[in-house]
Image 1 (cartoon, helix red, strand yellow):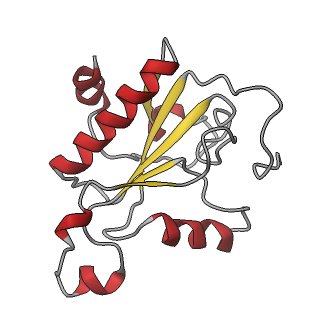
Image 2: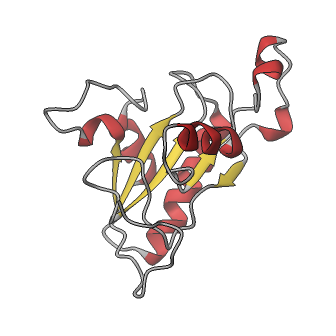
Length: 157
């Protein structure tokens, strides 16, 4: 397992953005970091987390969204470090996680498109994939991020 806490000697070649969902109706980067550490990882595997207004279980249970957080982008793993979000594709990719299961907000999609647009400025030929599109035959079936990836790719051109 690579040590993602050390900066690589040379800049990473990034040619792929992998879109994920948290498969939870609430959360933030700190919560995902705790989940990933509980699985034995060295920390959050995603580079970016896009909030939906429900950062914690209580706000979701009470149906009290924090609207000012909807679409906020939180940093996870630094971009110069290899992620831990999709087996076999971490070395050359950026992982972006939308908080939610299958319903996402306009603000979240706006932030996702913004991240991709910014990455495209420095990484030409950048491809975009949903987690499910990169699964190996032996992997458990997933539908993450539960959005139409062709639609998303159409948004970013």
